[in-house]
Image (cartoon, rainbow, N blue to C red; front, side):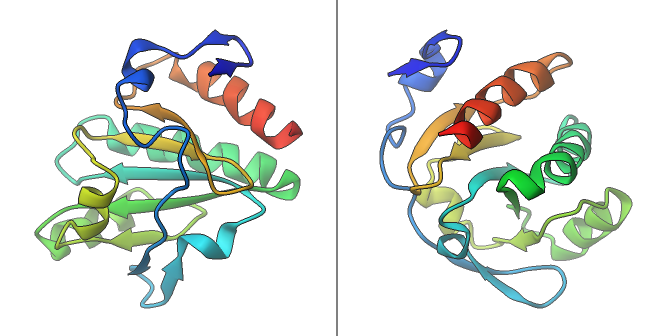
Length: 157
């Protein structure tokens, strides 16, 4: 599949769900509200899996929150799915790293298994039609520009 800046990376090609419809799910948020992925059909959705012990998760969540704040009016949404067994640790981490989008809890890891999460943080970019277009299995300084390039292409489609 061609991307805005070239071909898919090897890591993206190895992800078996890329190019397929994102599996729908419903999870409870830290706010107590239930959220369903399909409610965001029509938006470009960032689906980020994270854990409270992940060293890079806080930085990635903060960066994604800024992106969502900037591009929400263009149709960008995000859902942060926590995979911690310890819900207290997850809630404390979420309070220490506030974001402008729902933080969902997946303590049984049902959704994480559906999405074949094999590293944290793991970010999936889902297009307006609900198809997984990009996957990123880590976060490093400088990832922001690559994410933004891919997001802008999806927002323009």
